[in-house]
Image (cartoon, rainbow, N blue to C red):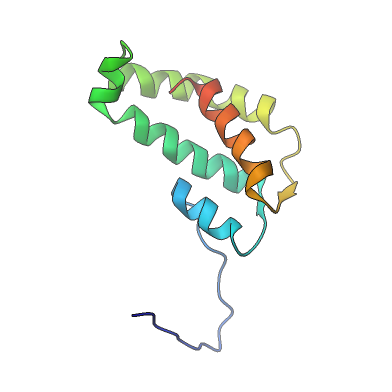
Length: 106
């Protein structure tokens, strides 16, 4: 059952704290580079925390997190050259999301 509420206060933007939230927001509005970075970072760290996935790839959860932290800034700068840009469809966002994930090496 869906709930509808009314408020006199302005509704804040959807917080992008999961990759699912990123793509959900994209269904109704555009997202900016920083929101893609947040969603992709969440996904990458979630994969880092999956011990079986990391072991299958010959890594540990700790080594994955270290690699993510070491490469994140470089990957942000190489994948997202225009951090102010907005994207309005999944076809634009998905390749950036994947490039970032591949770059940070999770």
